[in-house]
Image (cartoon, rainbow, N blue to C red):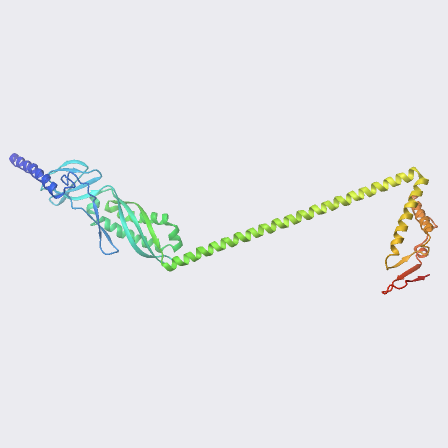
Length: 375
């Protein structure tokens, strides 16, 4: 029995040495045995037509007894066709021929391209959508035996989930709620892939392409919105300008009214001051004050009577209008009565003084004027 073990070990060492030479001839880029240097990416892209992308695992290396498992990788070992163990990164020695490297699983984050596909939104708009799915194997055993082709199954599940989520949203929501779509698709795919030993890290939508007619309508809508905003801004500007103009006019009217009120007040105060000064002058010198008042009344009477002769008017004037002395006497009597707070008995009534009507008429040809008096 011991001799059998020794012969098997020697055969393994010889096979390992021969495999190193063979690997140098077949794969000059690696330079080492596949079990010693497994740096090739684990998934290769294969396109079937224009609407499908398949990722196939690389063929596992042969077992020559001594195996070096790369970092972030796991080798699934079968013995006599049955799962035996999982090799972790580093040096691993297994029995050749009896033990077989059945699967190689990468523990890195792997991107899976989701090809463009058609989806119908809730408002019956067909859009073309694609994306990228990022997965990571957390259980190499389940990833090897739980599903036949994990990457293909996950990509198909992501496509169906994406179509389902798009169907629940309108076109506007689909364009605006990318983050929500990514989260929902990631959650839905994770629920199905848990038994496969694979976890979906995130999903990213790359492009959402509506039909050309919809894009044209969107451009028209954007143009209309911009025109609407421009009109609103213009109307707001006009409104603000009108408000400012009306406020300016109101302020102007207020200022004018205040100015007129102040001017009226000042004139009234000036008139009152003048009257007070006149009254004081009259009280201080009764005889001189009365003479000054009489002279002032006579001057005003002459000035007013001179203006009457220049105009063609019909007026009611006193009968003795030509007697300035009587007019002045009447004015002085009125002044005296007011100053004594009593009306004199000799003050003539309006019927006695205004009994004469004088009418002056000028002919169009510049002829002689005609005057008539009524007693």
